[in-house]
Length: 154
Image (cartoon, rainbow, N blue to C red):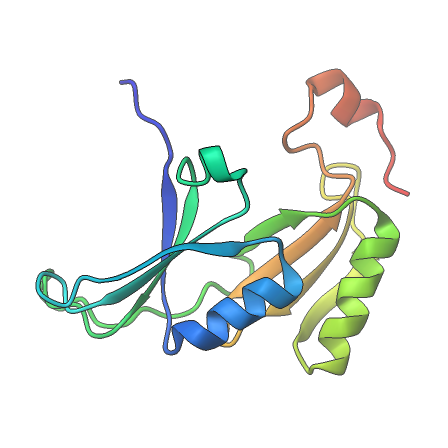
């Protein structure tokens, strides 16, 4: 099967709050907003951190409203406690800075801490809908095998 992962969709109460959170704590930006009210009953925002010429290759889809296209599709519970969205940061100090900012905003859920050589240094914070968002440095994700497993988180 030749599938390609294109998006992750989350149901949110207030897209403006979720967008403001994403712009404050991540490099995600809005690349599209539209209404699917005539088909799904939802308003939609697409967020991406990809370069402009590649921004639609993978997006976070924020959906607001009561979906009517799928029977009994009530708003879902937030991603928590271990389900999460993960973002890489360039240093352990950057993880500490995000954790500090989130703590001041009352959003810090866990950390910052160094868990292990695979997870690296990380913190978990909550978005306006209660979804867990991880910020980490030193994880093996996205790196060549040799580089990932020889690196020790700072």
